Length: 280
Image (tube, rainbow, N blue to C red; front, side, top):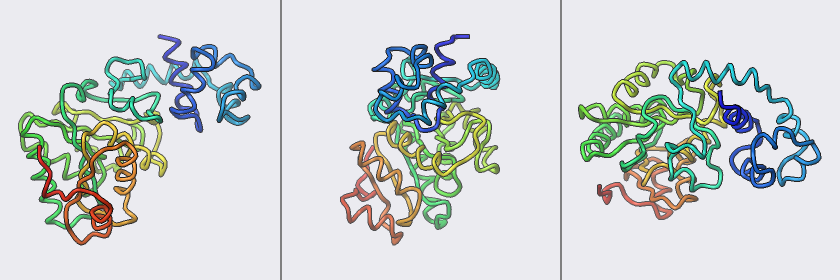
């Protein structure tokens, strides 16, 4: 197995490093092997690397990680790094691009297709759920790809809407590991996404359970790989507002369905586009 890949995955999974700090480490030391062999003092010379992070780097167990990677790959999980030809180019444009993406399914699905994200509450009104399915169907029938987060409610409707078209495909970006589908009752949906040629994507280790950090962080991936973000229904406190924040940071257009939800009202009042103006 490629020792460089093992080292890269190990560094990318160290808590507190992330894309920004790993870029600094790579710029400073030149390659991952040198990073792993660097002293604590040398590591701390890099901006943002403290004693705790240096200790985590020194604690990486390459042999154990090699076994884990072999097990993940045996479960049909692909590992994409910044240098992988299939790594999403739009994702590379953001400063905190995940150093490693774990993907099940089609690793080139974002190539030669336009991607649109649909997000919203886990408890939408039935009318919103139905409209989400129709919108997702329409996007799919134009030959585009729908991106969402596999959560209950709007996310589930967005994925299901792609199934109306026999050739419809969708991408689910998870906030947990690919071996730990969340929510559990969407396991069948995840399987159907793969069977229909779609993809499941995560930046966290495949064995990792769901976390608040993972659920929030996956939103920047959803927005980065998409051309536009559509919010169907959300409160001001809803998780979809994280996607709105990331989309605006990334310069992506944000559309909101015009309804009484407090989040949707805030999006429209703050310069968001009315979904009625959305055109494919």
